[in-house]
Length: 510
Ligand code: NDP
Image (tube, rainbow, N blue to C red; front, side, top):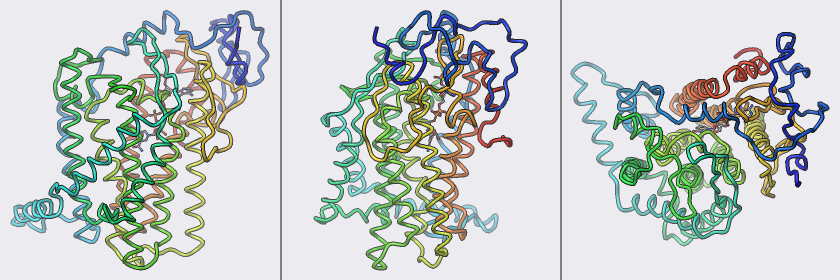
């Protein structure tokens, strides 16, 4: 029998590796030092007798029971219906407020100066939105055009087909994902360059009329969330529903919405937010070039940082089906609004700040630039390679790993014969590579990038640091949600995993 798992360097699960309770009391696991006498520790050169070979991930009866529980609504997250209603109201307001402070008030967090100023303050804010963020045809054409182009490209451009993880609610059927984001990215950049050079649609418009584009993105976020919610309810394709409209609208109703060959969740996660964010940074750089005749190293840093990020998402697209967003989160307001409006129009505050202020506000010494650029590249390397290690490890076990040649291929992205913990559920948890040091090495590296995206704009305004502050809260909350889910899913095996890898984000600290 063909044994793809062996070819790729992961030892197959064996009868001998089935969990055993024997010897457990004597077994002592330590940080980065799993006790190899434990039958559940597999791989990493540990000698084993292969008695039965079972290709793929085999979910045990116990695993099926726990998956069934996971697929029903059990707890209210984000403060339940009231909490999510507050978030859906508050976030669009916050986005307007921070942009107004950056663009019109020198990056200061403005507020009413006295009680009698409360009403005039809101009138001033409303005036800015009305005059500078009204949704114009220019913004509808730009934003809507990007969505249309991305949709058509995703449909027609040839791609690499990747098999996803078994979906419990589809009786462990696997879905296939068309991964063509990289080709679509290059084509989008060619189209954008032609539009800019020909003068048909100058890219500088995006940063100059930022507010208009932001409003259109919010309209798109609300409209698509409502349309997909209604579609799921009317066609009876709902999943893990709570019964509260506000909560289900926020969390989503459908797990895997698709149109033709396009998986909407994966399409929206890569194509819109990160491409738009990259175009915003290019827009900021072009605006600086037009104004000063050069691009500052700070703005160039943001072009590089957002370019690396979208390139990583596109070139590693086949790893996305292995992420939590794809196999667990539904396609609701939280994911849709965030991808359509939140990511592109809030993660870019340093670009907006730099576009609105002269370079003297955020100039650094040469050693500082070298340090910031070097740290960005290192953090990005850890982020990219840790995500690749985990996803490719799962693909190795599934026997579906094919490493595509894409640029750049960071070292240490595919682990040969990695060590892992075989759970009773049937899934395996990697305890090798970056994953032997931390339970969330990808979060730490991703957060470091977010911090640098703010730090590059200097210290005159706190708003460019919004992304890293917000992201820290998101990651801490996301991590606790994820670990609660894993605890329910893996039971005592999760405890064992936490003994072997006790730290979440920073070794010996947290
Ligand atoms: P992870 O990639 O950490 O995925 C978590 C899941 O992976 C767990 O639920 C578990 O699923 C599985 N898993 C956990 N530990 C292991 C292990 N040791 N070995 C094998 N499988 C394991 O997190 P996310 O999907 O949340 O995030 C992916 C990336 O996206 C992160 O880098 C994050 O920073 C980034 N992100 C960025 C955002 C942004 O706005 N910039 C927003 C959200 C995420 P299972 O049930 O299969 O075991």
